[in-house]
Length: 249
Image (cartoon, rainbow, N blue to C red; front, side):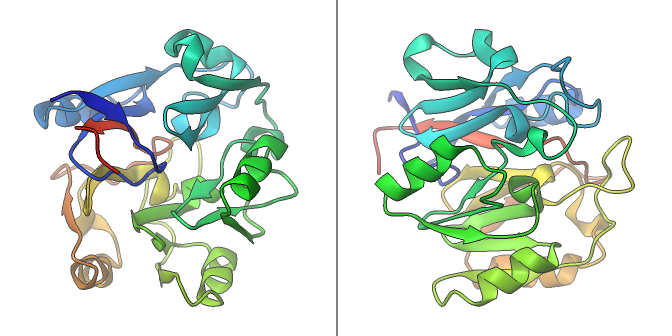
């Protein structure tokens, strides 16, 4: 069975075979390998602050069908046929958030004042509605559970999603996710889908203050999860699924 690019970004329809992930967490990469998942590693950009310099959700945006907008420092990680556009992502904020938008299926959550214009144009072409939020680090802040279903600790994201009938959203507390060099990280940055209705967390989900609420939310939506036991939940800039088994939609 051949492996194919996800048609819908972040939303696999079968078991994931390849992900984008930071090169800085060998425990995570090993845990994914044990599941048969290959990690395409993102290396540190000299143009970004150290806490996010190798974060895949900062350096890359998947448009779908194997087309990517990427930071210029990530060019060597992709085949030319897969590169839709090369941009310059750099610190400080908000220039490091050009690609940090969250495609959740029928909607893209982002700060439209910051998000790169090509992402907004692509959303329009695909008839995806923009949910405009205050948070620049939108992808980091959104744990994508399944299509149009998310968990976030960001109040502005929660409030805007709550206004949309087609979205299910859970608000959780801040502070349970580690991000080296910062006071805390984001649950979206510590997670990613590894199969249809299956999430992977970079760390032990029971360490989260709102573990029971998260577990109940996942169960309600028939989503299973895997995690790394006895490891703090750690933000690595998301686990971004890019390839899956078979030719499915």
